[in-house]
View 1: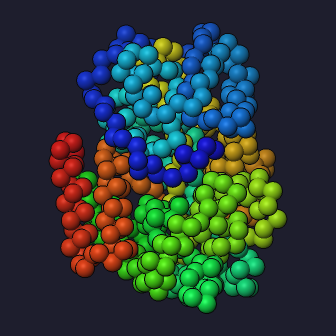
View 2: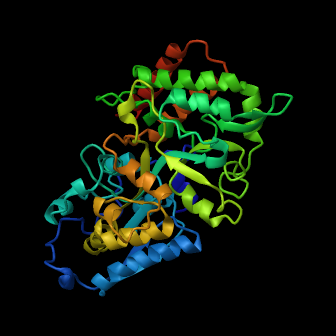
View 3: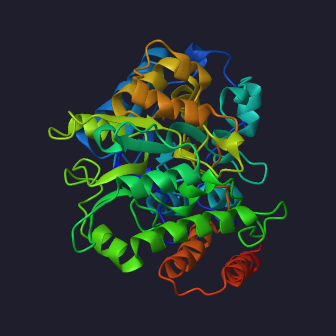
Length: 446
């Protein structure tokens, strides 16, 4: 999958969408017309599918999956447009030029899309077609809906776990608790005679690649929001537990020493990745890293293993869970052929063969239980770890929120100051983050 799927994109601008969108109102809405009784009764049509894939291999994989739909609906022609970003979808809907189907790599905009109507509510057609959403894990259902509206469906998912370099581990089993992670991180760290880090056991900084707070939070069971939608970061002791553990390990390395080491590491998406080069013994990463290791001529011979992320010592029941997010797909407002569009969305998100085709080609997690259990799914031991994480009942995601990007940025900015030692009162600092988030919520009418 394209690399932009693999992290919560904090740098994207907030979507300027409004419930006053009027473009495309002449197009029939989903559920507003009589439903055909079978595939043969669906009228011939050409529908446009926008997606963000760019690499030839990714585009081919998506095309192969759509080919299965074409066999079922030969009268429907699917025109695929690649490399489309979220802002293009929103602009097209507002301008009256919406595609019939659109896929997005980030879940950050789902809440705004559902609330504003940029994507149509699928609830009625899901019920009419008798689709049992229990085939999807709870987390996948959570990141595809908002305020009772299911305006997207999960296509493929990303799950996050622990990768470890077996030779560097020196026979140690992967850590199951934060205290075990701390002990191993220290034991496996190698320093030069002058004290500079040569090999890091584990990098605890949130500035390192995939170590976002959303990915780290499940290690302690951190919650982002209270039931009323206000921020829970300051009131949930789990976040203080996580940041206290993290800062103690940063201080053991030495903040400046660790930052010098981190800034000297190679590109996350290139052959110079520090895990490939044996510069970091354990990393937090997504399931796609397996495919990147296999595709790298120098890294593919590396002996490594995967495991769930370690969890707080006092919360052993969380072990095996983790963070998940993924690609979402839906029918935008103004789609010219909404019924055919829905059939394509339904096929891509619920058909076992289609999901397995995509997963095997892109090496991302398929989102239904049937696809995960399919004998046709390629699942070696290192990839199977992430299937288990995705399916774990305590696995979580970042809850849908209209201010998702802002909220993550506010928390991340504070933690950067915390790591640098510029925060003297952690409780007060977290309370301030809550206030920033809650003030933004009031402004947005949440």
